[in-house]
Length: 106
Image (cartoon, rainbow, N blue to C red):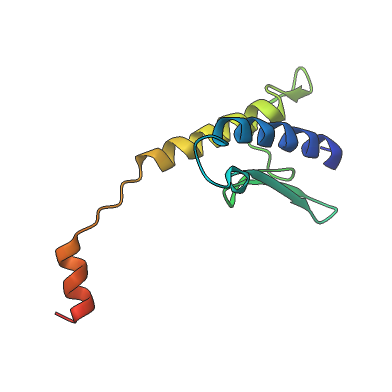
């Protein structure tokens, strides 16, 4: 996968994210995909989590067609949605009594 192609896809997806988030949160540009390359491997991350890399592509490959069964853009969208769904399930509980006692050394 050429770096330019990945750059175009990441830019498109970041624009979609920004459009959805700009009225909902402060600094929506901080929630974005990023990519980097060392000249050998290309890595795409979302919220710091690697969701794709060019060496270990998670997409299914169709050997009859000699191509992947889905586009990289489609695959990245699915990975972003998967991470968002996992994050939605995280519920931190705040127990004021417990925390107060921890800080008091009880």
